[in-house]
Image (tube, rainbow, N blue to C red):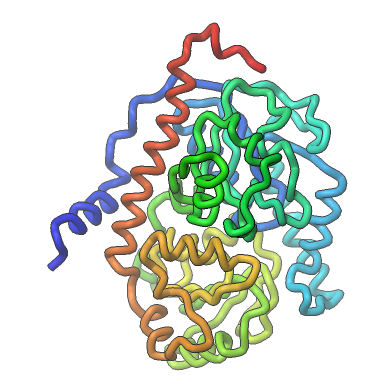
Length: 395
């Protein structure tokens, strides 16, 4: 029997879709500043879901449509050979190009601001509030967005800056935040982050630890569609393989587990030759549907974990060097660290987490963080909307 505190949280999770929304704030013009042009499923969905959530709250929200030739070239080069250092064949480049075109079409359909140049944003529109995040917007080590002052609030035309689920990515707290960047973040009126590493960095730099909130893909996602009973004639059972360059031990464990259960391993978005099927051309909408319909998830990506949790799927995650910090922080924050495995993890443990439903304690923790994350965002926006109109002039 569950303890009363846990039971109440589980009930809150189950009834969250029917809970009354907080009173609507005065509608505002809101810009969302994030990496919305990345050819990356997680980046696309967190940008879209955050903008949609703000619009559903009654605000006029758009994504700040920044452009950069330098960033585009780097992004598209990566999109055409995303599994480096593993070589990419000419045939696969054509498939990745098809995937990229799907992304560009999906991005073009998002609610976008007037375009402006990332490095020289004088043509940016003015907004009542700009929400920076989610994604690794403050990652000083990001290969092409790193150390971009715009994401730290510089030259943004707004009266109020809010950070929602911002992250420093793989930039470790042990290195500390140089004063140049810390001083910029003092201009933010409300700050929240999505991982403990970013919280520790800002705790030292700002003198107080910001609130921890959920990634938009977990915070704003609708109820899972993957729990519905499988009907006759539907596709065979499959495991979603999301990531690339997995370790040999992980490949062996997944192949053995899937073979025993007559399940197909389907690699989405990236080639993994050890999987039974490759789906390299999947667009963002394809990805969301596929992850919802999977029976289990094998991943070494942060958003592989997020979409498994979002859809209440069993999953196994291998850490990867670039994503180790954010994956670890997410799973520990949710009490789901038993889904993280390494070469020393017993096969029986891997089998268990791939075969059993998510623990009620994990769902309860998600519910609790959804409530506090919603509270943070509503309060951050209400503080602005409650200000006298004469004070809300654009910068």
